Image 1: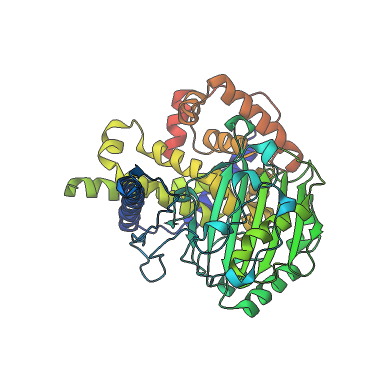
Image 2: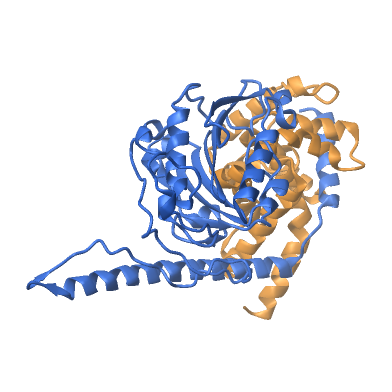
Length: 325
Length: 184
């Protein structure tokens, strides 16, 4: 084995070791305690949801109608606090399921994106979960190939709003979020975001992910500004990405309120990059939805029904208003 | 938690933090990311310190393994991966690193994370094949294969320091592992 290599590696990593700044064992203890606290809170929230569901079911079963028990489709309303111990000022305080707007949950992309009345739209609140805003596993792109399965929100976010939707504060220090555009410049434009994610099944298909974010803005003009900023960030060579052997191409658009981009890694690209990533952005009302499908091991189809996906996303996001006819 | 446990944890943290960060840096190519993964691993160690400190053969290996898993975690990657293409330059952002060292770190970026970790554990941390196998839950022959492939993959990306990289591995004795570990 080359002594030169070992020496150079040792020099490099010794240098790194000296450059490392220990935060300290006390900070590790605090982080450990906060982590344990979050786990307990999340567990308590799930327990309360189950109790609420059980109580609602029991109540409707015991309510007699013409002498027979009636099971209604009453939706459980979660009123428990899911706030995080370490960030009380920005944490979600309440979650709810959509009961006022019609759900556009259709399994057919071509059926959605239209006829959703803006009069039924509700105000966008980054702390409230509107179930109608979210794509189901079967509506995510490449669902038939990947058989997407929902991921627990505790895996993807430190602040759980529901078991599948997490909260993302606009101060979150993501190193990256979208392929193009610096999240440290984009997230502060928002008033917060929510995220849900899916893994492929079975596990043997390996390291494939689908993610949906909904970014919330203070008003429609701010959302439009945020969308315009994203559009300016997306170019075929954003952040010099072509130097890594990756290609970024626009593959779809929905007028001035939706766009789809594809990033593919060349065989010579860096091993940390995914082989394939397809991204969708849709602007509606005070919100922007962002859906991405990423595969580390696979190169998926280059062409896809991007117009259908954009339409499906828009159909869901119309719960927040905007142009939906 | 007993006071003695606190002192044990403090001493363990102080003695191992920098070394483990350097190992995880080799995996991630980003010092802030390596520091964050390692700190999270220590937090998890603290949560179960009574067991980690008494029942685990090597608490250092435990923390390194947890940090390495965090570093390659799919969902951690999901939020961090998109700047991977900028990591090559990040390696040179550490002021004062000599050109050969920068070249080695840059070359490590170009091979797979699994190969990267095996090479670092063997050539820098000084672990034996058997120790790497135990830590990464692989068979010794799989570790050897990973090292061989990693060395071969590195050669095209290194010039000055690559002499002999494509030669077969020489067996490392436990004595060599121990003495190198002491040097670290």
